[in-house]
Length: 526
Image (cartoon, rainbow, N blue to C red; front, side, top):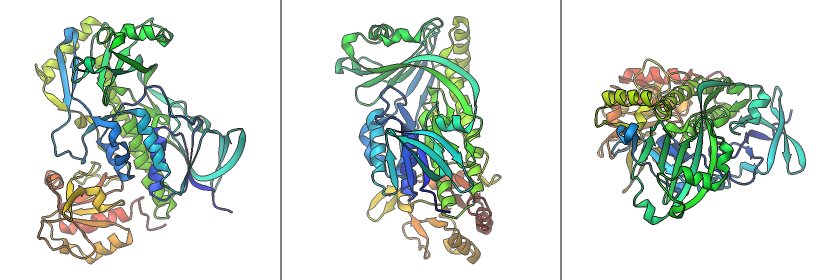
């Protein structure tokens, strides 16, 4: 039988689908990405992402393209009844654990345009718009995909089909996969305003969650003069009322009047917490909003989808390249579902704090939070809320398994670069400086070579590095601290920067490599 026309077809050119195609292109995977719309979505949606997302963008060479459309996230305050501060969040001081600021805001349309422009770097990636998925059928050797390109219908084939086509996903509907509600459905108005210089000086300098029982709201500091208000609609209010600009300005009255800026765009949304019942139906896989939707109160919606893409693409690369069997793709749902569910539950809990509309309950909430976090509240770190991997392809029982390996700045010649840029893609065995790199057994070295495990040694400036090992001098001690915290001398790190497992002694490193070589990531039976 002839080979499929494409290795992967991606449906949906929102941020998650377009990032997925960039990652696939970086891997040299023959990809078609389609969307039924040619233009970038014009209404407000994501405004923030975190350092996981930035590191993923780094892995496919897109950080330079987006840097003018992003800015570090401001500190956050929760204001309770009467405006009293009941909770605070901020990001930690440098050195940042993943080499980037822990959180960012971004301006959506040019950010997405940069992701789309990134696709044109790859001869192996083809994009078609407007192009709509009509149907697909799974065969033994491929997925047959019927698409409508303009007025013409066309049948094409692929080894895998990725549904990144949003909450109303056609891929999910054709697969017959239902969604499970996690019991959070709240109506909100989202308004983006381009503010005048004069009003910027008097608006709050922090992001604020107004936990006001009479009208919950959120104020977000975007890039440049962009400010966002998310305002909860009250019981009995008709969302259609806010199609009228004057009704929107009326809700902005506590902060703005019409001559303070320009209404850029606005829309009403039902904030949902839902998750697809299955994310994989043989060769059809879901990611992003097609697989799950998260309330925006942790600013994790888009980042959740980016993590999906990073998790899935390196596994597709290994399967398509013959380094692993198709069973590796089962770990996608095993890993991502618990992580997404846990993150969504935390976002829900934060949403419950904000959305309380009963005055007495809100007063009780304020007292409870001040008792828990102090008065005034201590500053908590946003990233401390993000869970680790607890299932799937990790060597559970070893310290640090399932965590994300830090990314320090490292020396390269006379300059300084980020760790990932020096080491490059793929699985990596990272060795602590206290370990003599020459202690690796011949069997360990053979396993590394057979299963394409790069070896990286954290060294001092004057350390001798054996042949075929990448010597790294870190500049801010992040990795050394991580090794100390986890009491280990070696970490085997997956291509998506999650730690597969660790070893506490030189003799255990060989066992760690044997476990990796017999895992679903690199089956010796392929």
